[in-house]
Image 1: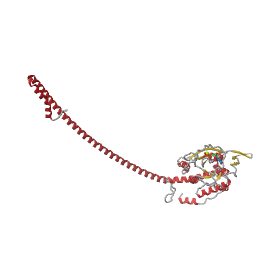
Image 2: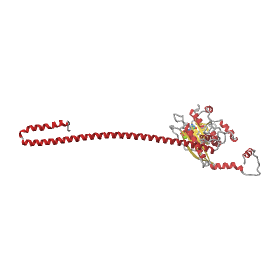
Image 3: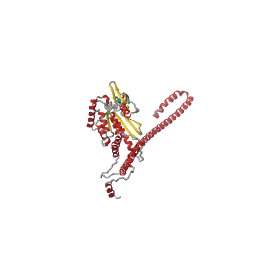
Image 4: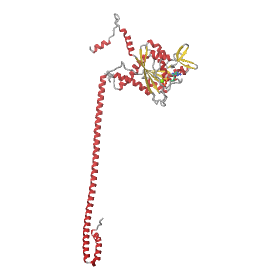
Length: 444
Ligand code: GTP
Ligand code: MG
């Protein structure tokens, strides 16, 4: 089909036709429901609040069960995220619920970095999902989606205002997750104080530009209740797993010497409102918002960071293939440049080492020549000495022979001329002195 035909066809108004009888596609929503039920649902809650603020108690109260709880110590050196996943079933609906606790939140002296591990955890879950999406063989159908669908932010019931830690953390999280702020342990604050506290919190959130989750009002079926509930934010909640007898009914409550605070009594606290909004009315919207708003934002930023674009500089659509090719070329070019640099570096290094070796060789050679010269000099001196000694030895031997000859002559003379004995004896003893004067040297 030619491009112009295609354009004309897509611009044409679609015609409404009536069916002659029952065809069956009105069962599509039922098919969808049935498929979803078979598949099961996952829902992930992040609880952020100070240690001991009542996070675990509220989770137990919300889901009417007892999750594993482990008291956090106040001495954590940094905030740590602890996820726990549970399989829950109500009627025939399976829910894979993950509760993530921000352990040690608010316990450090320096709280500047407290938000960071939380942001990193949320991003890691987005990244895992993105990696699964980018795989050639994707299995999103049975992928365990760990992306955080809602962050319940537990505010300490001070009655004053939000702490800067609360504002900073919520600000850092608001583009990444649906935040529902709640005032914890609301039974510890009086009714009038609570009213003022709620107004203060909301005005602080607005003035600091913190975006909290708004219950959707575009679906007619829930628009009314949701807009009414938006006005009640932040919910002031009380949690308890204790059951107290009120009238002839056992209800979840907290018992005090002066009375009983009933968790599910709407005039006592907003627990029921929170449960309605979080679980019964807006759970699917929270999941959807996570996917279409927060995850989409993460994905877009991440892909743009990686160099992917939808349009080229002339606003023409840019295909994935083209982006891939451009990136590949860029990468190959860079690789070549790096290779060339490395090769050059290697050549330079070899040259440097070669020059160093040559210098060392020259030095060694010079040293060798010097030593050789010294050795030859020494050898010559020793030779001279040897020759001198030999000469002296010869002289000595000659003298010895002369002395011996003289001695034998004198002995002979003595035997012939006994009278001349004394004179000859005198000559004999004076002879070595005369000899040494003649040679001019001492024999050692
Ligand atoms: P960590 O996990 O150790 O940080 O504590 P947490 O935030 O999970 O608090 P947890 O639910 O363990 O509750 C701590 C204490 O607060 C317990 O003694 C609870 O009984 C009490 N508590 C919980 N919820 C409320 C509440 O709504 N009001 C009051 N007054 N006390 C509460
Ligand atoms: Mg806990």
